[in-house]
Image 1 (cartoon, rainbow, N blue to C red):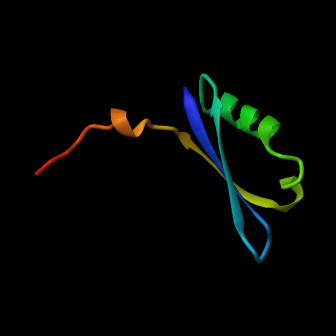
Image 2 (cartoon, rainbow, N blue to C red):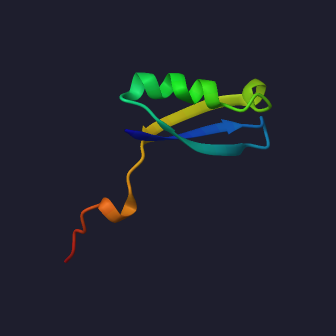
Image 3 (cartoon, helix red, strand yellow):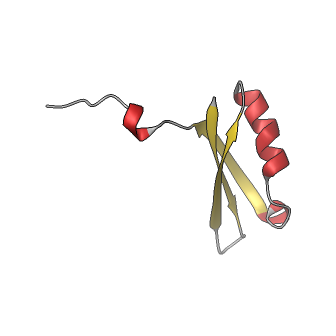
Length: 64
């Protein structure tokens, strides 16, 4: 499975770092995300979101 990871960091000047990890489940994705988190933003990170990465072309179209 592919997961998108978004990390908020930077204190008052909030910035975001987004990257993808491959893992069999959410727990493994959290571990992979932690290993891949850049060292320079670790001290300032205050929020991490992990969600399933969906291919936009694979989404079902719900028309009128």
